[in-house]
Structures are given as structure tokens and as C-alpha cells.
Image (cartoon, rainbow, N blue to C red):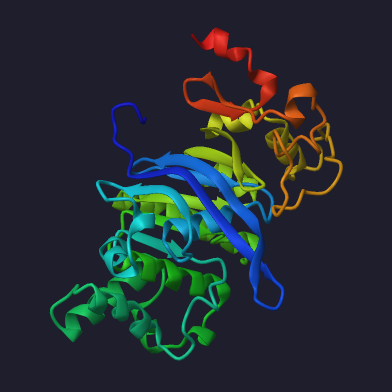
Length: 334
């Protein structure tokens, strides 16, 4: 997909280190390396699933890209923009129309003092969409109906809705300014399983209808498989494997990806598979291991893993992995 199509979003060597302060004068004693050198592209109309264990830095990646967190390092380009990380909040504002987010908690992300109508109309006012109050209200009704709600809900408050309905309102708010890319930050993890399916199908339908691109952040690999075109696996602030959905799920190359897939539940009690439980705890992002970050828990760890940082290796045209186990494949690709 990517050779002749320019990426919509380019992320290069993204880092987000949070300072740890201590002492009377609050001097910086160390840093939490939440995101530590992440690079990927998202193409128009594509859904990239960003998956990994809780605490690996997935959410921080999304929020740093959108500048909801400041202090990030690296490069983030949207279409022909300058580096978004170098812009002030004022300079960032024009790009916020094209870059939106759907948050994990559909209740806390909505202002309880605003009606649904006010929530949807406010971004229209900010970006000058619509010429009159009636036109904006009509647009809000259209948005509600597009996400499967009723226009009569416009004057209700968030507490009057279920969790799934509130998330639909959050989706409508993100759609209101006609974005090109939406970051879904664990957008279905707080919902019941049956409601999750409805929201995922809604997002897929909206993406196809509007030509939207998504960065879909989730720890649930079954959800990621259903919605994504490509998948990036993240561990301890770094990406370890990136590829098409088919290659990642049918032929995972990194031992961490293999362990994640083996741990994912299968909705058929008659199906049994071999499981390899990972030993040890996730290392601290304050003092990550040398070499490959996964080597203290890796069942296939050998000599170079503990000292040498693995390079990215192409195992096929659209499948890359950062793992010493596949270093010989460099000769076969060429």
C-alpha cells in the first residue's frame, strides 16, 4: 500500500520521557522512558492497530502525537506539515481539525454540565463550521443519527445515557470537524463485549464511508485483529514488530508477539493450543534493560540479546521485526 502513496502521518523516533523529581529543590533525578524511539507511518484510509500489554506506552504515543502531552522528542508530520512537536499550542490549532481522538472512558471525556447538543456544537463554533445556530444544530442532529442515536437526544445530558451511547456521542464529537485521522485510545475497553462489537462495526463503517484513517490503540488482540489493516506490537516503550494483520496473526516472528497471541482467549472451548507463559515481571521503564528490552523474559534469549540492540529486519515485503533471532533473514531478502 505504501510504496506509491504518501503517508498521512509519519512518526519518526518518537520519545516521551517523564522527569522524576526528588529532594528539597525538586531536581530531576531520573526519567520514566514511557516512549523510547517509536517510528511508524499511517496511510490515508488505513487503520493501524497499536497493541501491547498495559503500561507499554501505547496511550502516551497517541497523546504525544496530538500534543495533549508536551515534552515529546522526535518528528511527527501530518501530510505536508512541519514537525508537530516543534509547534506552539497556537500553531498546532489548525491541525487539530484533522487530528481527533476518542478517549477510553466515555463518561469522564464528556462535560457533565453540557448537553449533547452543546458538546457537538462547540467544536463547530471553534472551527467556524456552519453559518448560523440553526445550521449547527441541524448538523449536530445529523451527527447523532450517523452514529446510531436519535436527534431528540440533543438536549439530554451525559448521565442520561448508557456507556455505549456515551461512546457514540464521543465518536460524533470527533467526527464533527471532518477529521482525516482519529486516534482511538482504548475506545472500547470500558464497554461490555456486545457493545464493543457494535462500536467497532460503527467505526469500521464510518472509516469506509468517510475515508478515515485510524490509530487504534488497544491491549485486546482480538479487537485489533478485527479492525486493523496493519498491526504494530509495542513493548516497554518500543516497537518490536510491525506488519500486515494477516502476517502478524498467522506468522508472528517476535517471541513477545507469539506470547501475546498464545495468551489471547479463543471463543471455542473445544479448541486447545500450546501456551508458553512469560516468566518474570515487566522491567521498569525508569531503568530499562540493555540490548533487547524483552530479553529478561524471552524464552529464546541468547548471547547478543542482552547487550546489542536489535536492528529492524524485513522478513517479508510488509513485515518487519526487531529481533536477533531473524538476523540471517537479511541475506535471504536481498
